[in-house]
View (tube, rainbow, N blue to C red):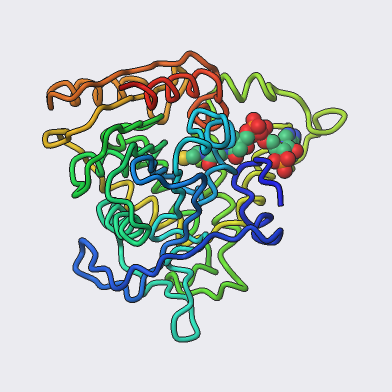
Length: 356
Ligand code: COA
């Protein structure tokens, strides 16, 4: 089966026979003191492991272990994170729904649902650390994280028991700001106010799909810049002309509905609640204790994690006496630029990973 890119289409890949592997990581005590029993993490590796060449990739909110799928412009043979050279480890976050233990994991005949505890970025990093232990990785050439995956990479840099040579953080920050918290809350309310949510204990055959779809629409607007939406759609009609109806008359409306409905096919509503919650609580005050080199990448049009957030991280790295580089890339795509930009981001990552 050819892994030819296409973002996030894990379901299609699973159907095509490209399944992740699973690391059983035992019982995990969370920051809140709860226990997640018999946790498992879905992972995929690319390239040969030589002992010194491992790169851990931390996905954004709704990504998967299939890093050559969702980051197809950055990861793969001959690309910036070159699987001919590095042993690339993709993984699905604890709390996710693409193979790792999360609220949709069926235990005693029912999804965990509300039995799944609130988790933190630190809990998810603990799970990743156990995955690396399972794989026999005892040092990392790099940890790379984008968007909220950047939180995991940053937490790795200040908490790791194993040496990490380099850390790349793209389109991220030290914490979410009030606007991000607000957007996440609106998305969660869309799910939790859907009568089908049932306090989190819905059947996987009858999920709160309407709420999840609206939640994704809220997210999707934030992922694109105003400029990107304007360039893509402007006020174009979806049909021949604009009718005076409540339906999706504008192309941008149709697009948003499409993106919302498509998401429902691949994602669990509870997972979105738990993953956004973990991201909300992350609040990095300093990089003191980090013993690594940093590369921070930001996009000029990203209003979710604007360049000022990467500038703050770059400053924190210097204050912690770490070598740090900052690349601010001028592209109009908004937050999604980290997924779409293979070229400039790729060049920055490639040089950074190869540097002595
Ligand atoms: N009505 C309905 N559907 C429309 C449409 C319209 N007027 N115009 C475009 N579409 C559909 C296209 O048919 C296409 O469908 P397909 O994906 O099934 O082939 C899709 O919209 C194209 O989406 P678009 O956003 O224009 O693609 P892109 O290449 O610019 O960006 C992604 C790709 C994956 C980055 C983007 O679609 C996306 O999903 N962004 C969110 C990713 C994410 O989670 N980011 C945040 C991480 S924290």
